[in-house]
Image (cartoon, rainbow, N blue to C red; front, side, top):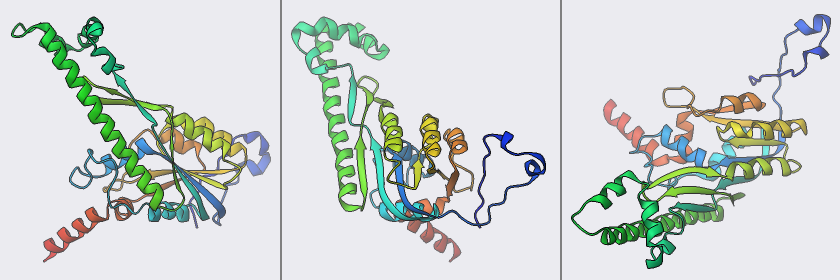
Length: 294
C-alpha cells in the first residue's frame, strides 16, 4: 500500500456527512508510460550536497562510474510505471562571458573600453593603480589573462558536452536538451545562474504531455509549479524526486512548493543514490565498515 496525499481543490463539492469522511487510498496507481525530466544543474548541486568532496568532487561534471540507466529505471519502478519512454536532461547551450567579447577588447583601438571594463573589478583596479609598471603593460597582461581564462572555460564546457554525448550514446532513451545560457565572470572566475533552461523544461513538460501517463521531475525549482499544475489539469500524474541525506533528512533545496504542487514525492534514500550514481564510494564505505568490524 502506498501513502498518498489526495488534494481536494474545491471543498464545495462535498456536502453533508461526505465532507467529514476521510479519503483512503488502498491500492497503488499504475501507469503505462513515464517520462523523466531532469534539471541538470539542480541535479549536480544535489550530488555536491549529498556527498563529500572525497566521494564526488565539485570539480567533476558528473560521477564517472554512474549507472544512469539503472537509476532512471529505478525511479520509474518507484513511480509504478511500466515503461521509461524517455529521459529528457536539460542543460545550458552556451556560456555568456563577462567581459563580453574579450577578443575584440584586446585590439589596440579598444584599449580605452577594456580599461573601463576592467576597472569595475576592485582587485584589478588596485593592480592597475600600482606604479611599478606602466598601466598599458598591465592592461595588456590582464586582457591576455582574461582571454586565456575564456579559452580554458570553453575547453571545460566542451568537456561537459562530451560527457553528455557519451551518456546519450550509451544509456538507453536519454536525450540531452540544450537551451539558454549561463554567465561566467572572467574576472572573478565564477559561474552565475542559468537562464532559459527552466523555460525549456517547463515547455516540454506541457508540449509532450500527450506521450506520457506520468511525468517524473528531478528538480527543486519552484518555477515549474505553473507548468506542473497545467499538466495535472490535462489529466496527467506528476511526481517530484527528493533526495535523502545520509542522516535520513530531506536534502534542502527549495523544493517545498514544487512538492506541494505535484501529486506525489519520491524520497530516494542516500544509499540508493550512492548505489547507482557513486558505486565506487559505496564500495569504499563498505570496505571501511568491514575494516572497523575486523
